[in-house]
Image (cartoon, rainbow, N blue to C red; front, side, top):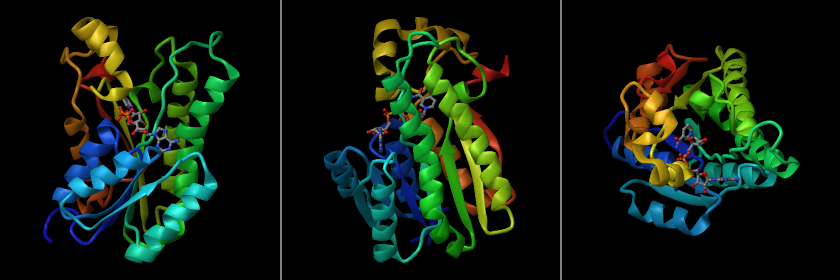
Length: 248
Ligand SMILES: NC(=O)c1ccc[n+]([C@@H]2O[C@H](COP(=O)([O-])OP(=O)(O)OC[C@H]3O[C@@H](n4cnc5c(N)ncnc54)[C@H](O)[C@@H]3O)[C@@H](O)[C@H]2O)c1
């Protein structure tokens, strides 16, 4: 197969969500073999069936070390290698500092922050063996600037940004690049309620210089660039895909 990811095996978490599915579809079109994973098992199977590439579907809860071990072992058995890890799975909790509950905090930290670290920890031996690997962690504009809400979410997305940078430094001479992507307002199931209620009056859209939400298909090409050899000298970078939201 030809394409910008020809010959590479990529594992994607949160692959049935908005950004995850757009990324899986683009990676398949660019010739990658895929391991598509999500906590939602049925939809992961359906997604895999729709992709025109060599693909393995796995139910993976990113907050579980056992689940990660099983997924990486299944990847090794099926493909014998892993070149790209895209950590996309995420959950949001909107309350601010005082309203955030212990349960809400723990759930968001477990998925967004612990899940990203566990993914890198568990996949790293296979990624190092690739000799030319790329990890892409999904942070957010809310990992760069404060919003005055979503305390747990912001904390985890800030943590993903720095976890990415320290991993980039740790593995810079060991064949693994590590970068973070920071989407702005993207129309996906995660924020669909807000968009349905408020439309273009949604405050973050009003603050976005392009005055609209982005689509998942507008985030996927940045994932592709970081996964491909075109970004061979890019590591520890934070790429915003936000219609200018953090430019002012
Ligand atoms: N949509 C936005 O505006 C926006 C902005 C910035 C960052 N992001 C980030 O982009 C990523 C993708 O979000 P999206 O907008 O596509 O949302 P989404 O809700 O469409 O997708 C999230 C996916 O993660 C999966 N998931 C949740 N918990 C999981 C777990 N424990 N294990 C495995 N999978 C799990 C869900 O099943 C879902 O498929 C997230 O990390 C999110 O924080 C989104």
